[in-house]
Length: 173
Image (tube, rainbow, N blue to C red; front, side):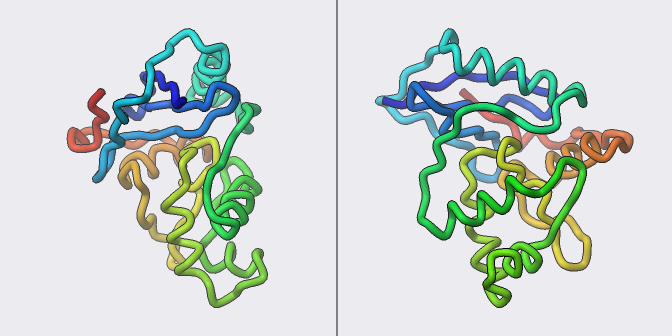
């Protein structure tokens, strides 16, 4: 059974999901807000969620660079390879879809890498926000580009951009 909780954050509410033993999702509002299935149960007291709250609080305060939570990544073997490569992108650094494809030994698969990146169920923890376009421009992010810019600024120690005007990015629970 999937359990969930809501976590307020500087970039808006996050929806955390778990299978009871591992974190299975970190979702935020965006162009497609996550939907809570009828069989999901809210459990704000799950110890895993308490640990996640602590780590997210430290991350948003600039004190935590690597999350240490049990994770369950459900996806195809290719998606899991991409997500593992994402996890290797260091805090404060960025990479491109093309560089990830090369690192995976598939230099012509940058579009497939981008699609897998977009299916990452564990936003922030598996840092898909650290992937930018080949030109250096911010490209696609399920939580919206303002959030991506904010997360990168946080990690790079730059002034945090405003999230004003992102009402459409709010998560409704």
